[in-house]
Length: 122
Image (cartoon, rainbow, N blue to C red; front, top):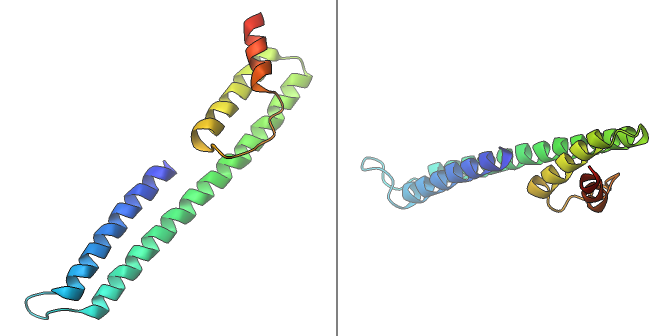
């Protein structure tokens, strides 16, 4: 969702930049080229990008915190011997990390191999 918002913001920023180029070179029939207005449009485009990047980064930060928290839950349920819950939680963690945070190293409490072995046993 944050990535989609970033793409939408980039599209809006590109539209602002296109408008800025037009304003700077052609302008309107009444006033002609307007470099000051073009600068304002470019600033709006930069602001749109910056805000979208901040929102995406915040969403990723929160996601990383949640993964770390769920990882602690995996450790707890593993210590309680609740293998089914551990498999479900750890599999979900790996799925989210693989899809949304490919470079994120969260030091998992159980390995992928352990999950595979446990699934084979049941």
